[in-house]
Image 1: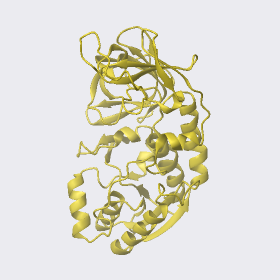
Image 2 (image 1 turned 180 degrees about the vertical axis):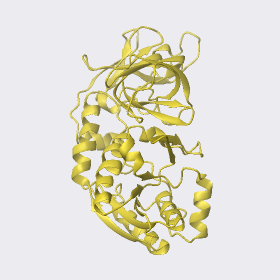
Image 3 (image 1 turned 135 degrees about the vertical axis):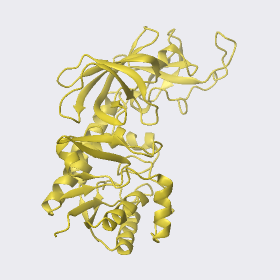
Image 4 (image 1 turned 120 degrees about the vertical axis):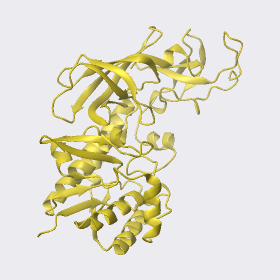
Length: 374
């Protein structure tokens, strides 16, 4: 009987490394593929491609699989990074991991793997795939603290049909234990938390190299100027640190307390940044949002009704009602106002453990009814 061939993306991290070992243990013919997707400053302290490649090769040797490197830098720059910069230039805050998964890991990588004769591709994501009645569902990982279905919500039926997630039913603590038990050289390697394929770096300094920007006023909702921003692209809604409001940090609010300042709204047309005091200021709370670029994993949109959704990765599922569904747009009405709903981020819909899909947040209505966050 011919063994099924799986091409797995091996990043040099512990998750993809253990995934490769698990697949081999399950009897698959496994080939590792290391993706190089960033070249602009590959020799800098923030880009660890060379070290990651060495780790991936070392792991492949221990696990006993062949590995090759493939360069998707052109595809990444055209399909992911260009859109990333367009969104920031427009004052939104994009999530590059979502686009990177849809365009690189499950498109360019998948296409390359199929040319190698693969039956499946695999990654170290914490998620699950289930086939039911000829349709493929994306499910949350059993380890709720590591679940990455949020970042995978733009996948489609063809992509899921050819994808394996070996870690979907395993706890992260068990992954570390497996890595140590089988002697992987990267068993204690720190998880990557930087921008997809670009790494961890001073973010404002990095964006500064690619974006044009203008300084402008920083105002309170009452219109009082309290500072100057250095360019709207460099701020995100809900941001507390690095705003740059100096001498008035200790100002007392109406309740006699000195609350911290938060970014609450970007007025793109007038190049004005609005800031508020207090984590729960009404301008930071939204009961409704509208999303664009909708993608539904089943191939058809869900019926209008009650579901759960996330508007950011590290967030509990929140009850909502979906409506206004069109070809590529929808709206969500939340039972409880959501904090710092941010244009450019993803609103992802769930029905229990099933990730239905989602879209890019276009704007949100403030609970105060005084402005729309765009």
